[in-house]
Length: 317
Ligand SMILES: O=C(O)CCC(=O)C(=O)O
Ligand SMILES: [Fe+2]
Image (cartoon, rainbow, N blue to C red):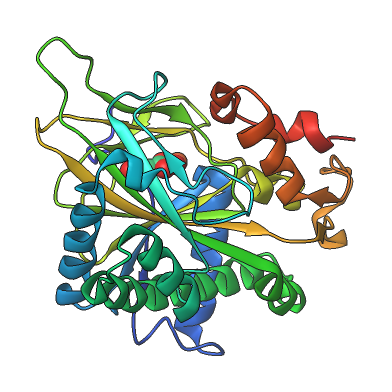
């Protein structure tokens, strides 16, 4: 007999009850996020701390950004690895994205804003800072829950100290009549954790790795944030968590915008001993995540960044 409910990614509520470490609701949420990561490699966080006006103004800022000429968007804003600007290139012709490192840091956002708008753009800077503070806080809380769920809360503070966050603004232009409607081809993220926040137009599709079926994706909403385990998290968890493949399909015939927080780990990331046992013997060497990024985003063919699990080749034992 078929299931009566649609296959969905798990939903975890981040609200007054669950956000209180030490309470039963917190402990339950820790179990839920661990289960979601082990089973699906992702979950939807329903997070009501982002006021609707912050949601609206950061997406208005995103539209302003992509209205700038391509030559402006190509300007150098950072020396850190990865691809700060991804133009509409051959792999994903509808997609372009641009990132800001340490997006809740005032100087970093000011620097980015002054490169894009030498005359200044206070509206952009302030909307990005207000939104980033909240999404970075969500990353910290979600990671705290995940670590507690796996019994490695002792490592949380050091991961936070070495986290390098980058916010990525993405625009997917609506396909022309003779164009395919694939916005972003199927991939896993090269991050430690990714949090995706969508604006109005749907399109994110997520695959359930255990049986390969496409899950009902999280619909855009000001309170919806999809938390993905990236390839570096897979290595850190010693393959207990397998990142889910996902893609963007443009179904609504409209331009689409999304903002994601991508996190990377600076320095050497060891595989915690708690992740290793008879069922999961050690599968990875300690990882320099940023070197992995350099290799797969800068030196190599850009297409390699979509190949799932490149991290196994990079640092598998
Ligand atoms: O736009 C989205 O909803 C997802 C973006 C994404 O998967 C990515 O940039 O890695
Ligand atoms: Fe992704």
